[in-house]
Structure formats: structure tokens, C-alpha cells
Length: 394
Image (tube, rainbow, N blue to C red; front, side):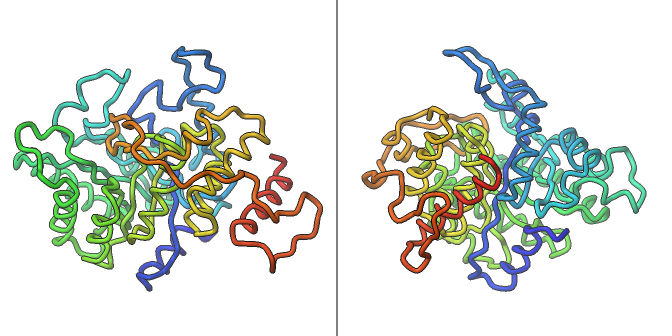
């Protein structure tokens, strides 16, 4: 089946003004957080540290893939072996499977209290390209389509010539092997994690310059399909997207934050030129992931605004009888969410526009005939959501 990722990338490359937007669910956290990776169990009580199981985590992946609102499902190699190779989950799906192809030391966050994230990142790869593509040490040519043929490769620059040279050498080796084996990749660039006494004065410019310089010597066959970078505001995204229109710029979600954080970041980044968003914790910490992702898709496709999406999401939680983690007023606040794996969101800094009723006026009740000519885009989006919920039995 044709993948929505390939279709959208083709249109974006053909026309840099294309409004297509690629959405990815990053469920590769088992390569970083250990037992906490699947997220807090809905059955937790008080402050107890009870998490979902890996089996439950993978079931959420299945459900989100079947819903079809994301373009990419990013996983660990072990999860992909089960879902992609054994179950063939993606064969009849427009969603593309992808695997985290390296796990540099700055994402070694076992037990949440290790020292690794505070030390300068060093390159490391657990998974091999062959294991990602076919599940074993060496793939025969016809076996390379059994698994995923897309991977994420991450780098972290720390303004240190020896450390950053080693990072680039490792990326070069991966890139050359990937090209030889027909393995595609996208490039994630984290903020510096341990610069010591030499932090860059402008982190956003530091990252943009490193990307531009590092890829200047890479021809089209070896280039990443797109970028995944921290969101440092619209100016940094616009500068990179304008510098090289062949670069498809994407943002990483960072810490969970509020629901408004997630929706507004995507909306604002798209206005600045981003065409991809990869959200991990923002999705995984949501009260109801399928509904949350559906609203992400509506925001990405410009069918609803961020604040209205928050209100509608809370209305859906009420209908599903799921208690929200925050009040509507609190969830409409914007916080300074962090961009690093090991960081946590900071206090709210701005409140969104004043809340209006969550139930959109003009939306006919189930079974009534809609008057599309009189409905606003937001009302049409709501009507379509309700129709699909009835179809899917939500």
C-alpha cells in the first residue's frame, strides 16, 4: 500500500509552499527510559510509580496505526520486529514503520536518575541496520523489505572538537552503510547536553549552523529525508527552512507540557515552515491517546486552531468519562517545555485566549442532517470527528 509519508514528501519537495504535514508518534522510549518508557498506568493510585507494561505500550502502537492519523510510527527494533516483521501490521496501512537506529549516551535514562544525561553525549548503536530491516545479522537482498526501511539517527553537538568530530564520524559511517543497504533515515539533532564552560551563546543558531555545515558535504543519495530538531521558536525554523528549501524541517515534541503546548507548538512551527512533527511524551502522557492524536492531525491539517482543539479534546474526555489531568483553564496555558530527553517542563508562562464553551455551536446531534454551507471549519471538523467515533464505537 502507498504510504502517506512518501506521498506527502513528494508533494513537499515538488512545492515548498505545500501545506502537507507529516505527523509521527515516537514510541521508541524503551531505548531511553527503561521500565518507565510505556508511561504511567491509568490504574496508578496517588504517587505510586506504576507504569504500563511493554505489552500495553505495543497495543497502543497497534491502535494508533490502525486509526491512521499519523504518518510514521517510530519504534525500537524489538517492537518493530513484532509489529512489522511478525504481525505484518503495516502491510495494509498507509503508516510507515520506523526504528530508532542509534541510542547515543545522552538518552541513557534508566531509572530516571543515572548520570549519563549530564555527561557529554557519545555515539552508540544497539540496533544494526540489518536487524531493523529483516530481524537478523545479515539480510538477503529480498529480505530487506520484511522490516522497516526507515530509521531515526540522532546526534548531539557539545561545542567540543573531539566529541563533535566523533559524533560526525559515527554518523558518516552509519550514513554510508545505510545508502549501501537501501535504508532511509531522518536526522535528529538534540540541544547540547553538556558543554561545560563553553555553551554556545545562541543554541538555535548553533544547531542550525551545524546542520547546514554537516549536510553541505552530503549528496542527495545520502541525505536524511527530513530533520527532527528542538523547537526554539518560529524564527529559527524559518531561518533553516528558507536557507535550503530541499531540507524538510521537523520538530521534536520534548517534555509533555500542557495540551495547548502540544497543539500550539505544531501550529506555530508549521506557520514558520516546519512540515514534520514527531511527538513522543506529548502523546504518551495524554489521557486518551487516540483522541489526542486525532486533534493533532486536525491542527496539522489546519482544520481547527490550537485553543479550540484543547476545548474540544476536554469535551471528548468528558464524554468518554476520563478525568483530565488538568482543568481546562490550566490546560489552555502555555509552558516552556524542554527539548531534551532528560528535561522536564517549566512553569506556565502565558495563558491562551479566554476559553469558550467546549461544545461547538452549530454541530447537529448524532443522526441529524448537517448543513455544511452554514458550518464553520471547526464545526465541520467536530462533525467529522463525531461521525468517526460512532463508526469506530468510541
